Amino acid sequence: MKRWIVPALTAVVVIGITSFALLQRRAPSPATPSESPKVTLLPAESIALPNPDLRSGNSLEAVLKNRRTRRDFLDTELSLKQISQLLWSAQGVTVDWGGRTAPSAKSTYPLSVYLIASKVQGLDPGEYQYIPGDRTPVHALKPIKKVELQKALFEALNESSFRAAPAVLIITGNMGKMAEAYGGIPHDKEVYLEAGHAAENLYLQSESLHLGMVTISSFSEAKIKDLVTIPSSETIIYLIPLGIPKQ
Image 1 (cartoon, rainbow, N blue to C red):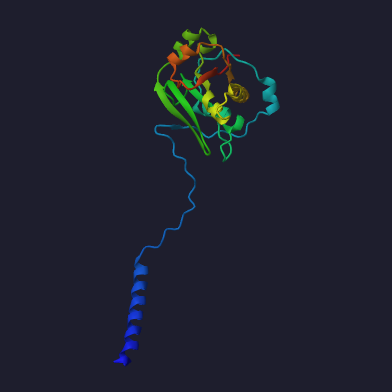
Image 2 (spheres, rainbow, N blue to C red):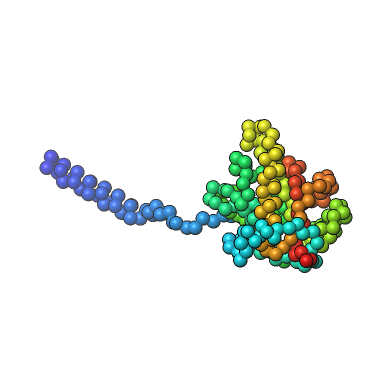
């Protein structure tokens, strides 16, 4: 009887090894992670903007020399490419940790930029919010409301620069977000300074594009919020009519 024990045990081991090998061959092998490019999903219904140009035929020195406030605009539409470049200059994401074209205290980035489009190629007249992205660029427009506001803004503000401006940018600041970055202590000054950085970027970019703009900071915020969809948590800092200058 004992002489059968060794052959039997050997047979059991062989059968076990064979079965395990067959199961391994049938089982799907783990998928190898692919090196696919990083894709940033746009928010629902967002409008992707053309990529910004990183070079131009204008020197920084020439743009600084020629920068002026322009208040009178031709009644001519702007291209989506021009709007894209302007929005990027104000708040575009430029590095993989989320840094933007304008500096921000403690990298808080409390600003939001809104576009009121009246005559922009490819866009319905209405309100849009610029979505720069967080750590990776999104660079898109989020439609808010389809509405014609050119005449309403002109009548509400009684400011000639709104009469024919094909587009208006609105820069707002979230004071609560900045205060949170400072442990709950209000630092509104930092938000206003940051808006100034973004506005200067816009001035230089508009000059480089042979466009014109004016920053307006004296207005009734209540009147603007009656016309434009701005969250109550945000303070309107600048209204910026822009377009092709008449001169």
